[in-house]
Length: 379
Image 1 (cartoon, rainbow, N blue to C red):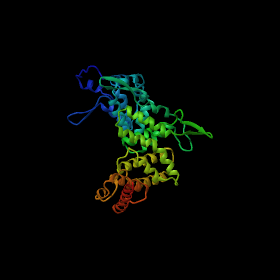
Image 2: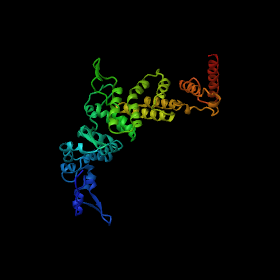
Image 3: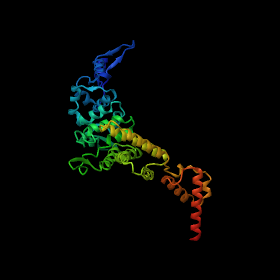
Image 4: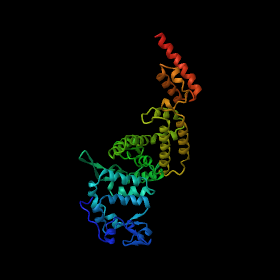
């Protein structure tokens, strides 16, 4: 930010200090649009231009380079070549920006209608490779923004599964999910592990990226943590990145035990109750469908159907004993073995051994109570 600010004395001086021509329009008291910088012309042309020298505008505030990418995403406008040329000489200035300001702009890009344009500009301008700063207790430290995305550009992929390189595929997937930060981050990072050392390989002349989901999950955790996201948010995005390939495996392998998978997931500390699991599965279904379509497949109906089936099963999968539909008198009836009995009921419902109904839970709970009491008596 500027060290000092001098207020303009005329309207023209004020306008010429603004960032882009589309933001340099004014409205008179009579309702007339006043345009001194060609903003109307650029709106008609759907073009983003700085007011005057792009190098000077970006020198005044380096965040304007991120705003340029963001406006491209929000408006779907192209970026004027002369404006674009002003980025490279000012990349070093990004280090003076705070993490908070940069993250806000990236989030606005992720939530924009033309998100692919915003992210593509962010990466091809090399803004993602820069560092910003975070100050904690008076100590500043450099925070890499998103350098992990760069290697995806022009990264070859297996042609039998993908029609795009790694980066264009990523953009296609991001564009196909709803403007939700969990989904957009998961889509952006779902294949970030591809092409990495120890992941990229070749088998029978074909490109492989085995375990890219696991490696990508670790990378996603590091990225989102350093960018300052809350633990719960990070855990959910990481879960989606790590599970997206397993979801595809289950879709293509009808004999795989979906209930067993969901039962295992219900034991994860990520989920506190059924609705949390259902929300995560809904996100996973959305990501899976976008991944298939983003790979060039025209028919995603099998993926949609499987995701719907998984959703229906998740809704019936209790995660905690509070998700059990037992009669409220049952805990007292099985005391002092309440915890043991309720955990057994939870496991049996998760396994599909008994239905989650008051009658079935009462019968199974009392039977477990009698067994535990008898065992303790003989002991």
